[in-house]
Structure formats: C-alpha cells, structure tokens
Amino acid sequence: MSESRDDCNQPLSFMNLLPMLRFPLWIRTATCEIVHLTDENKNNYYNYLLTAFRLMPPMTEQDVSALTIAPAPRYTLIWVGVLIGVGFYIVDVLVDAVLFNKGTVLDQLLHPSAHALWMRLSFIGFSTCFGVYAFTVLRREQAARAREQEAEKRLEVLFDSAVDFIFLIDSEGAIVRANQCVFATTGYSSDEVSGRNIKEFFTPDSQDTCDCNFPGLRERGFNRADIDFIRKDGSIINMECSATAVPDEHGDFTTFLIIQRDISERLRVARGLEESERRFRAIFNSTYQFIGLLDPKGTVLEANQTALDFIGLTNADVVGKPFWDTPWWTHSPQLQKRLKDGIMEAAHGKLVRFEAMHPGKEGQAAVIDFSLKPVLNEQGETVLIIPEGRDITERKHAEQEAQRMQQESAHVMRLSTMGEMASGMAHELNQPLTALVSYCGTALKLARDMPSLPEGYIDILERASGQAHRAGNIIRHLREFVSKGSNNKTRVVLDDLVQGVIDFIGWERRDSDIEVTFLPGSLAREVFIDKVQIEQVLINLIRNSIEAIMNAGISDGQVDIATRLAAEGSVEVTVADNGPGIDPAVAGSLFEPYQTSKEDGMGMGLSISRSIIEAHNGKLWADEQRQQGALFCMSIPGCD
Image 1 (cartoon, rainbow, N blue to C red):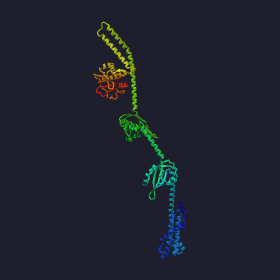
Image 2: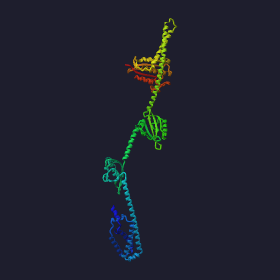
Image 3: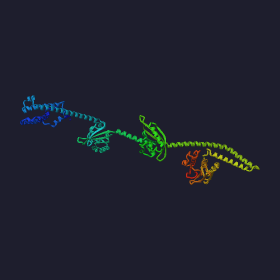
Image 4: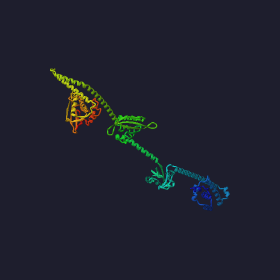
C-alpha cells in the first residue's frame, strides 16, 4: 500500500500525458467539417491520425490506476486541461497549415477562419472544464480516502481500548485478531492467541455450549451464551459471550465478531443475593410468628409459611388480594373493619396493634397478638406494611389459669380462716357442752333417786342428756373436719364413713324434708384414705343434691347413696337424686374451676373434690346420660 502511494505522488510525465491526446484527436476528427475537404485531403488526414496513434504508447492498467488514485498537486489537473486545449489548438493549426495547405502557420495563428477559431476555442474550454471536473473528482476521492483512513484509525483505537474481549474469527473458529484487553487480562501473547481455535480457551462445558450455539449463528446472524474462559494461569473467568456474523461482499458469513464481557463480579453478586434470599426465606418461613408484606393500600404481597399453614392456604390464594378479604379475616366483619382502619393508620406511618380471635384450618380458635408496622423510605413515606401475628393462646390460657389459681388460693385461705374460726368456736363450745352433759347426767341420777316426780320428768332429762351428748359429738366432728393436721391416711371402712357423714348432716336433711337413703354394699371393705378429706367430698356431693332439689321446688325429694365393690377391687360410691339434673351449659366443664349453675356458688367444690379423689388414686365423674336427676360416682382403691 505504501509503494502505490509513493508512485501516486510522482508528478505526471509527458509520456503519461500522451494517452490523453487521443481524446482531442478523436474530437478533431468528429468535429471538423469534412465536407469541405477533398478525398485526397481526407485520406491524408486519416493516415496522419493513424500514424499518430501508432507512435503513442498504449494505455496500460497501471496508467489508469495512476490517473485514478494519484493525488495530483494543487490545480495540476486544471492546468493539464488548459495545456491539452492549447496543445489541440497548436496541433490543429499545424494540421491545417501543413496537411491542408491553408496558409502558413502564422496565418492560421493570426487570421484563422471563424469556424476553425470557434472549434479550437471550444476545445480549449472543454478541456479546461474537463480538467476542473477531474480535479474536483480526485479531491473528493482523496477526502473520502482520508475520512476512511481516519475512521480506520478510530476503529483501531476503539478496538484496542475496549474493556471487553473482542475477537475476529473465521468460519472455522480460528482467531484472526484479538484486542489488547484479551492479552492484558488473560496473560496470553498475540502469538499464543492468533490462529488458534477460540474453543481451546473454553472449559469443556463451555465448548459444548459453543458447539450447540455456533452452527445456528450462520442462520440467525446473532447469538449469545454464558461461557467460562481459561486464563493462562488456569483460573476461570465467567464471561457473557455475544457473537455476530459479518457478511462479505457476496453476503456470505465468513467472519464472526465475538465480544465477551467479564461477568464474574455480577455472578458473585447474584449468587450472594440468591444466598441472601435463601436465608431470608428460611427465616421468613421458619419463624413461629405470622409475617407478611402489604403495599400501602393493603394488598397482600407475601405471606410466610407459618401464616399459610395456620389457615391451610398457599401464596397463590392470598397474594394480590386485599388483606381484609383473605380467609384470616372474613369470619368477622367487625375484625375486617378494624383491620381496614388499622391499614389506613399504618399507611400514615403509625404502628397499629390489637388482639383478635382467629379460627384455624381445623376449626380451633387462636388468640393472635396482631400488629401493623409501616416501612418508611428516606422521604418518610410508607412504602410497605409488615403485618405480624403472634399466637398467644397458650399465654392467655396460662394467664387465666394463674388467675384461677389465685382465686382458688384466696378461696382456700378463706376456708382456712373459716376452719380456724370453726375450730375456735368448737373449742369454746366444747367446755359448756361438757358441763351441760355433766349437769344433765347429775340431774338424771338425782331424779331417779327421788321417790316421786312429776310424770315425764325422767324422760325429759334423758332427752336433754342425749341431745347434749349429740351436740358434743357434732362439735368433736367439726373440730376433726377443720383440723389442719388431718392429712394422715388411715384404714377406714368406707360404709361406716358414709354413714357417719349422713348422720353429720342429718339436721340439714330434716330441715329440707328430703329423704336420704343409704344402701351399703362394699361388704365392710376398708380403704386407705384421709378420712376428713373424703368426708368433705361426700358432704359436698350430698349437699349439692339437696340444694338442687330445694332450688327446683321439688316435693318428695330423695337422695340415694350406695356403695359397691367394683371389678378392679376398688370401692365405688354413688350419690343420685331426683332433682333437675345437670345444666347442659356446664355439663362439658363441670369439674373445671369456677364453673357453677348456682347464683351464689363459687364453682370450686367439684374441682377440689376431683383433685382430692385423684390424689387418692381414684376417680370422680358424673353420669351425663342420666335422664332424670343427677348421678355422681367416685371410686377409691380398696386395701389388700
């Protein structure tokens, strides 16, 4: 290329100008008025032209090339056009003077004919214009070549300064050229890259990817894939590869442009984000709390697995719906309204919190401590709302149980205080009753020694003495019942204990006019019990039956008590009545604390009674199938 440019810079010689003279000769032949010439002159003229053409060197391809691309000096072509015109003028003068004998050369120069002068000047003007045209064309070609060279230089700079790998490969995949970034990044030299197949620098998996995608590049003209490029030191670069087919002048794809961008950092960030997302999902879905995401309008964006499992749903069932229209809230219009108001408050940046009762997928009710927390951007605007729910059902039950235990403890304390008061009263009454029994005994002894007494006097004293003894037994029994030291278990015949309890509350049944019957059937079987505690249970059961009959206003009330030996060797006691029976409203929770159908009841009697019986390894239950009245049963293991 440089040699041709040097040749083009050489000035035009006369031999290079000779071929140009063909044109004016042909023009002279075509434009002269041949009609005025004789046949001999015509022949002489043609012979002269042929001789002149034979003396001129022929135009070669090199001459044409030189004339086409030679950068002529400034205005050279214009002067050449002028000289050609002047040369034609002189040649035409010589031809007319010598060949056609039209006077001397001086006459032709000074006194030409009008026709000859017009033709000669016309050709001078034409050749001058042709020179101007040739000059303009060549200048444009030079400017175009300069722009092309400048564009090539710029493309060369861009090619080598690009921060991505750029390869030019042939149709077989051999590397024709690579930019400087390839060498600087991979450690290879130009000789180690040029001519080698580009797949040699790929990992085996990437080579398979290249084999799958490269054949289709000829049809589609473009393709992309992710590949792994091997550096000279053996390390791997993750690359995003795009390939473009470059057509030649015939439209065939013989060259391909390969651009590879290092995406190692992007993949590392993507893997980090993926790992972060995985950890977030693990925490988000594994927490025992109910968590979700809402937009400021209350539309569900996300819900964790705990919340979905509670109601038996999937994300597809709730995502995109208003939160208040999801199955968590549709069971209660009041809660839906409360939630809508809460979302509006949270959208304005306020933390909202309240408790709500929600049914689970199996119908179980749960108490949820619910909150709506706004997420604000830098401008203080709410962009997200985080709904969070915590199942506090067990905590609520524990609080209720603690409250029940506190009330039960207070009740026990009151009972203890009453017991101390009763014990004190029994102690105080015991001495007067002892004196009364003594006085009655003395009076009865003296009366029997007297010879004559009013009729019935002895009988009255005997009855008074009997009642005094009975009062003393009641006081003694009361002291034993409320005694704090009555936790010692002893062997007791249960039939005797039941009879003693009946006798103890005899005054209550006589005042109520209710008949109490006892059918012993345990065959005097002994049980190992705390006598006072079991007496308390029996008294509670019998009193409940008497009070139920009295409150229902039933005449001919009856309480039947019976004992029998059970199959497993325990002694079973039943207390049955003909009262109104067990209230269905409390039937399922009859033995729970504070459950009672009495207006002034505490709801502690049956709960404490069951605890006492279970402490003796026994059972206490109610026959809920009994149609008339109530039936309570208790069983206590018998002694071996």
